[in-house]
Image (cartoon, rainbow, N blue to C red; front, side, top):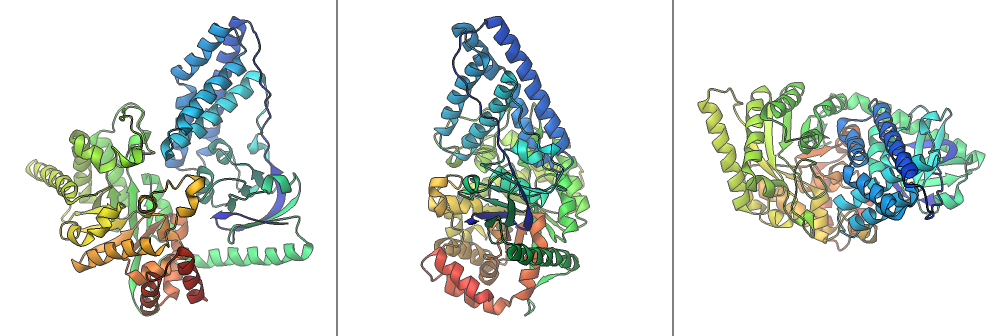
Length: 569
C-alpha cells in the first residue's frame, strides 16, 4: 500500500508504526454538585498548567526559543482568567459537570476564532483545542499518551501532531512521522525540520490504512508512505536511506566553500534566524550571512511590555558579533496579522493580514519604531548591519521610514555614540505593488529581499493556510516569476543587490529559475543551506538564464516544474 503526501522535512525512515490515538472523550450534560465541580476544575487547571510547563521544559533541550513560544501561548491560555471564569460561571449558573462546561466554552471560542478566516485566529483555534482537550482529560482522569515513554524505533502516525506532541519526540526513537493533514508551513512541519526528522504531512488515508505495529517506509524525499512493504522494498529503501545519509554527510565538505556556479558566477547563501541562539546553526552549516533576523520574536517573548532599547541592543549586538563581519539583515518589527503581543491591543479588523501591521504600525507608533532603530544603529558598530523594512507598499512609506532612521542616526552621532561606517537600509518586496515599482524603489533603497510567502498569497488573493485554496500556493507560477524578475531587474538597474528570504529560496526546484533570473542572495533555514549550495555549484548561470527566460513565458506552474525537472536531468 503506497500513499502520497507532502514531504515536509526530508529524509527516509523505516520502522514500526506508533499510532498516536488520543483518548476518546464522551461528554454529556449532567446535573452536578457545584462546589465539587468547581474543585475538580481548579485541580484540573493546576495539572494542565503543570503538564504544559513540564512539556516545555523537556522540549527546551531540542527547540529554539522561537519554537518554544507556542508553549508560552498555551500557558497564557491555561492561565487566562476569562476562559476559566466563563467555565466556572456556566457550572454555577446551570449546575452542570465541569467537563461539559469546558467543552461548551471551548466550542464557542473555537467557532469564534475559526469564523474570522485568517492565519492568526485559525492558529488560536488550534491552541484552544489543544489546551482544552488536555483540561478535559485532566477533569475526567483520562490519560493522554506520553510520547516521552517511547523506547523503541517508531514512525508516528496521527491525524496531526500538536505542538505539545511534537515537542515530546525523542529523536533517538522517533525516526519520523506521517500525518493525515497539514502542509509545509504547519506547526508540525516546521518543528520536524528543526528536529531534523523526516516527515510526510497531508497524507490522506494514513489513519485508515496504517495500524499500530505495522512496518512502514517513510519516504520524505518524494513524499510517500509505504505500508507493510515487501522484504525487497525494505532492502531497496535501506540502500536509499544509506545513500541519503552519505550525501548529507558529504555535504559537510561544502561548509567553507563558496556558492559558485560551474561557469564562475557567485551568489550568497544565508540563513534565516528568529533568535541570537539560531546563529550557531547558520555558521555550522556554512551560512555566508544572516538573510533574515525576525525581530518580532524578541517582542513576542517579552511578557509585559515592549523590549527596551538596551534589551534589543544586546540581542542585535550578539548576532552581529557572532557573524564576525558577515552580512546580517535585520527586519524591523513585523507584528500584526498572525503575530500578536499579549501586552498590545490591535484594532479589530475583518482581515488583519491586509490591515494595521508591520511598517504601517511602526509609522503610526513611531515611539516603538524609534526605540528599535536606535538599538539597531548602536549595534551597527559590531558588524555589517543591513536594516530591512517589511510590508512596504508605497514610496512614501519607505521615505518616511528612512527619514526616521536618519533622524535617530543623527541624534546618536550627536550624542557621541559609536556606530558602523555603512549601514545598508533596504526593504522587503512582498506586496505586488512594490514589485511592479521596484525600479523606482531601487533608486532609494540599498537592497531588496523578496518575501515569497506573502508575495504569493497577496498575488493569488489566497490565504496560504486555507486547505480549500491551497492549490493556489504556486511560487513557480509564471505570474509570480515575472514579479520576482521585476524586483531583481529593478535592483540591478540601480546597482543594488536583491535577495530572497521566503520559503521559495530553499526550494530545490525554484533555485535554478531564481539563479537564472539573477537573484544575488538565497536565505533559508540553516538545515537547507548545504543542499542549496551543492545545487548552485552544479549549475551553469548561462544555461539557467536561458531556462528562466523560457519559464516566464510559460502558462502554468506545472509547465515550469516540468521544464525545470527536464533541465536538471
